[in-house]
Image (tube, rainbow, N blue to C red; front, side, top):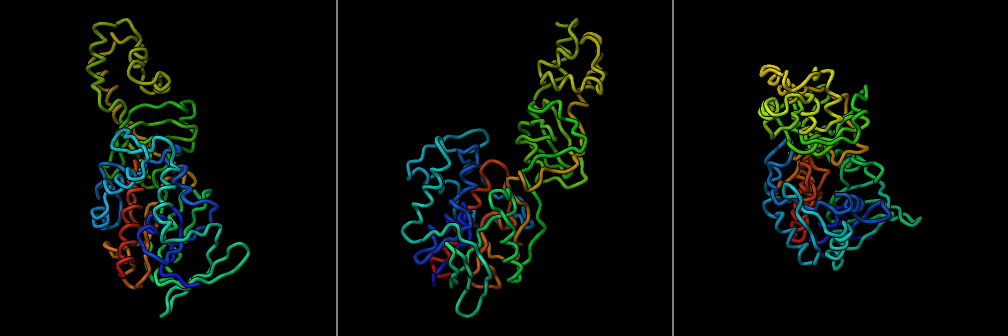
Length: 393
C-alpha cells in the first residue's frame, strides 16, 4: 500500500497533523481508540490550551526552538477552531481553558477535521521501518494481517514515555536514533514527589497554597497537596520539571499573606488563644498539628515575642525538603527531553538530514508547563509539519 503521508500515533499531535497534511494521509495507532490521553486529560474535560502561551512556558535544550511553530499557530488559532465546531468551553485559573462537557468533544473535532483527506487505522502495530529512494517502508500488523506501507513522508507523533498504561512507549526515540538523530536524556515531568519515609502520610488529602521552588531558582505559586507517598498538587507538579534527583526543594507556606503581621495582631486581640489555634486560621489545622513539635508551637499567642514570630514565619516560608524521587512515568503527565531539536527544522519539524521525516508533539525535546501548554505544543508542531507537507515541503 502506498500513501503520501504516514503518521504514527493518533494522539493530539498526530490527529491535528492529519487535518493539515493533505490527501493521501494515513494515521496508525496501536490503541483501540484515538486520542486516549486527550480523553483522560483535565479530569475528562481536556485543558486544551492556555491563553498565556509563549515560548517561555516551555523547557528545552534550545529555548528558542518552539518560537516559530508557536507563533505561526497560536492558542487563538486553536480556540477559533474549537469555536467553529461549537464546543462550549470555560476558563479556569491562570489562562487554562477546558471543555464544558467532555474531552471527547475535542477528539470528535480532530477526527472531523481530518475526515476528508486522511484514514485512521487503530489496533495496528508497527514493525520494521526502512528508507530508500522510493520513500519510507513501514511493516504493520492489523487484524491478523501483515502489510508494508510505503510513504513519501513519515510523521512520528507517538509521544513520550508518560503513562505507560495508556500505551506510551519510547518508539519515537528508537526511530530517531535509527535515522541518526540524537535524543536528549528523558525523565518524568509534571509528576508528584515521593519521600522514602512516607513522612507526609498523616497529612494525606490536605491541600494548601504554597510556593514550591527548586535549586535553580524556579518557583511556582499554586496549590500543594499532601499524599500518602509525598507531595503533589499543581505547584509541586510544576516544580518537578525543574528538579533533579538529590536536590532539595523549598516550600513557602502562606506565600501571599503577611502571616507575621497577622500573628502580631492576634497577640493584641486574642492573646489567650493557643498559638496552634491562631495558626489554624491561616493554615490547615492538620498541617499545624503536624508541624507543632518541630516548630515548638506550644503556648499562647500572647507569649510569642516578635523574635519568635519572625523565626516561626521564617521557618514556614523556607521549609526545605529533599524528595527521595518522583512517581516516575507511571503518573507523569509529560516526558522531559526527547528528540534533539538540533536535528529538526523549527519551521517544519522535519529532520534536517532525512527529508520527509518529521517529529512532532511530546516526542520532541519541548516540554510545557502544567495548564494546557503541552496540548498547544501538540497543535502548533502538528500544524507546522502538516502544512509543510501539504505545501510539498
